[in-house]
Length: 164
Image (tube, rainbow, N blue to C red; front, top):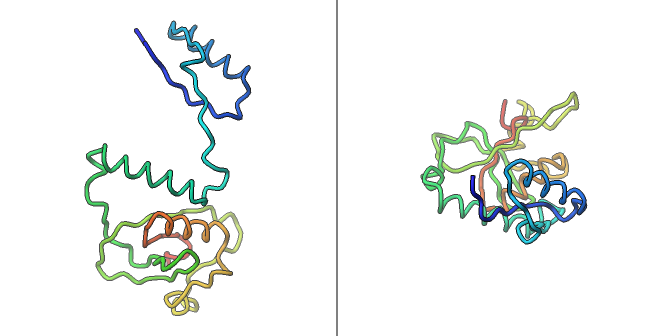
């Protein structure tokens, strides 16, 4: 195998001695001499996945995916589940009862882990279709709503809220 150039993406926090081991591994494994001009660290986008920088990066990746992959460029609309969260703002959402509607949506499935999580029940169904009380939602749910909103996605399916 003849390789002229290889670009490794190694995060900045990886110590230089470990980077050297990677370069040595490449040299032994595939016979590639790996001088440092071919090994470049990547910059951290951010430590906050909900930051504007992270959302912009995901938008860029999604745009590239739509442009470069035939399967991804097809219509992304799907039949909405019967119950789905309609995102109306970064901190505002409600449970939506779908009637044969099609639209793109994203999902969050989470480990219920023995804890009592916010769930839709007969008692809460009417209230949740008007508004999901933001302060009662776990941080993971809030983050999912905010991230989807930042990406311009209107619908989010969360198992404990949408299964009833």
